Image (cartoon, rainbow, N blue to C red; front, top):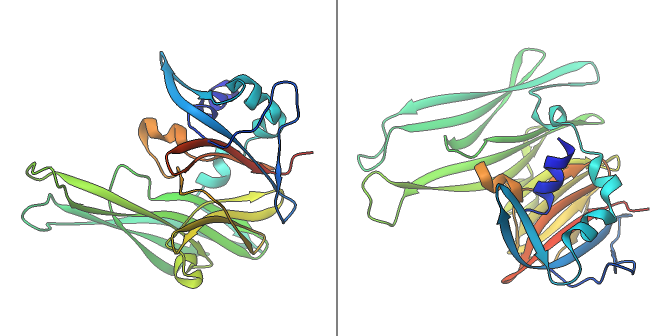
Length: 267
């Protein structure tokens, strides 16, 4: 399983030049005790069923070896896929409710989704998450101190522009809910995604007014990326952020330049 995860890590891309091989890579020290390291990628390539990266400098193997120990300490899937957590003795759970109705005559039947949050079996809040799509609607369910966090991908289907009858496109937007309150609404984000507990504190990515950044332990730090891959399904899932106890590895872009990047506590 670990070998598979490593493959996924260098199956996406990243990008600024950081020399490696026989020198310690340049690391950008960022506030909040976290470091950001990033590596320019020329291209991605398939070798059979394995997707790998070709860095601008050095080798993919050398890049992945730098923080292999931290990256291999993955957060267990159950931590961010469970639908049942406990906070101060209370059981908080969610379930996805689907309503199917015939939509516009140019579209197929519509599946409307909502996440129902229960506390000790009683309905606490209902969160609309758009329509059914290949993209998973729930991406994380976490307990931290006396709060719960739910990460969703809100999806909408729109008519495709390719003039194929009944063909639709899916537009998805990430949103993180803290105790039932949308961070997008509360903080004015266009999108929030990638929630995890990193080195014991809450971490997530956000986008506001076109600027990407990350929030760590309640403080925001802007990033220079124009895109961070996330919420991809199927083969594209190889490009999603990979969570570990003390770091996150992800693929990002600055314009047309690709990067493999890591943010974490690197001793």
